[in-house]
Amino acid sequence: MLRHDATHLDYGALVKARRTLDFSTCTRTVRIAVLSDAAVPQLAPLLEVLLAQHRVRAEIHLGEYDTTELAILDPGSALYAFRPEVVVILNSTNALRLKYYGSPGERAGFADEVAQRLAGLWDTLAGRCPALVLQSTYVLPYERQFGNFDHKVAESLYAVVAALNARLTALARERPHVLINDVEALASYVGRRQWCDERMWTLYKAFCAFDHLPLVAQNIADIVLASLGHVVKCLVLDLDNTLWGGVVGDDGLEGIAIGPYGDGEPYHRLQFYLRELKRRGIILAVCSKNDHATALEPFRSHPEMVLREEDLAVFVANWNPKPDNIRRIRETLNIGFDSMVFVDDNPFERNLVRAELPEVIVPELPEDASDYVRVLAELNLFEATSFSDEDRRRADLYRANAERQRLESEATDLGAYLRSLDMRITLAPFDELHLTRIVQLLQRSNQFNLTTRRYNLAECRAMMADDATWVPWYAKLTDRFGDNGLISVVILERRPDALVIDAWLMSCRVLGRGVEAFAMNRVVEWARAHGYRTVIGRYLPTAKNGMVREFYAQFGFDKVDESPTGEATWQLDVAAYAPREVPMVAVESAGSGTSDGAH
Image (cartoon, rainbow, N blue to C red; front, side, top):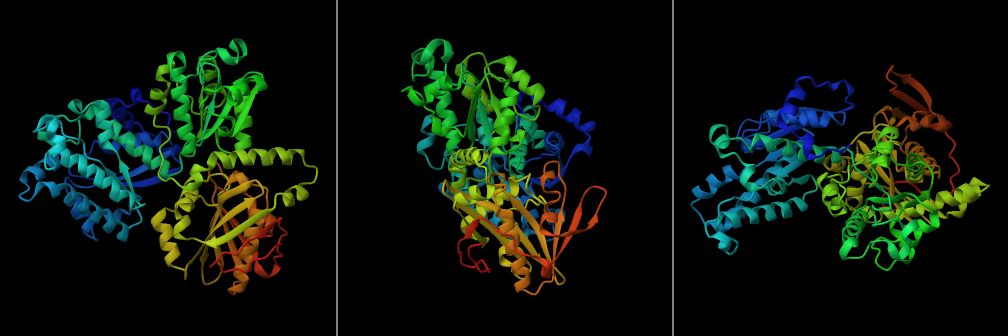
């Protein structure tokens, strides 16, 4: 998981680590092509080490120096033979500078010309392979021909590079398969004066000073990991001296520091930062050693609190050990420990959680609360590759789910409880409107995921266009607590002799509510309607999907094959299948290809 800080990004140490790197613990391989107008062979070992730390083996194709266009435009190039899953395009301002000074035309249009040329390469790539493209921004130049007046001269190099970055970003927004690798942000953080070693550029065409190359590699690794589903989902927060200054149990509601000025300002700033994370989809939870009512009072009654009770998906305040309470929060949210970050000012509590729950990310916090936001932001824990409406509503979704779980624990008749939820489900073919969320679910779901096939946007679009081979569905669910959103993906492959379940995954938020039975009814119904006698299911084991190892058995499938590593093939006789009763109403959706109705 992403738990690094800059102190671990030492170029010499990473190169040394590559010499003894053991890939045997890697559970996933990703093919990365790196194309650049600078020389970047030193980048490959750094990427291999940084990704292997997260059990991802990187197979890397390095393009020849300054051959980006040739590699992409030639359909027979080694780039396409490599079949990349990710294409990294690194552009150097040093290389751009030479073209800018040598440009005979109107320089005010130079930025748009370069941006359109790069966008054309992205589109060519998209037409020839389903790879994700990571396009770098350009580092702003240190020289300013007009001084501060450069900003007002559109054809100055400084203004051209700034405009080019803005144009690239705008063009990338129009293309979901293109993500921005913000090298300019890295250079600004380090200092542009130190970023590039001009002597190394002259001698070797080095992309940047070697000391800073690990930052570039880490930035790329962060994006790749996020695209593979390695993302933080939940921030677990301590309260006293973390979310506010002081101890609410001792100092009282009036005595804690939380106002926008003076002693409370660092905590006020932190709460704003956390609220913005919540709005972009990070779940906030509280884990505090306090009396429950005392801990809750500031959220309900303090006029200067930024965060309110409704911003928190789970609130646990008692005197139990914090690792126990974090386990309870994880069970309530049904997420992995490796997607949780624990933030606490107390070194004892941090070390205890690290010892008992090593998968949880536990950042070191500085003694001065003024630096809390800076330290958390520097870790880049919240890298994302997409942002959907469901991300905006995620905290509310989990909060509603916690309320469902509370009611379920109090119910004595599970069937009656499920029926009382008034669930309504829609099963429909993939469409453009929901494609971002579909890909996000494909990339992130780990536990209820039968094959963990991480199809990307281009691959999903290809399925939508090939209905002779693929039947790709998504499912949405609502109930009396609200909209659960898009919660499941089922991909069927049409083969001559059988209908094959290629992928089946579901959000753990809706486990045990009959969604899987509803979907299986539809799978078999579709198979029967299209003349299939057999449905084949596959289970590919991972470190996290053991909960669905026997998924097919509950629906009457027979296991016909199993390898020593646990890969299993299951088979169902369509004629023998009896539809399961499900506690939900089906909602018609155009193009579902199945008949709907209550069950």
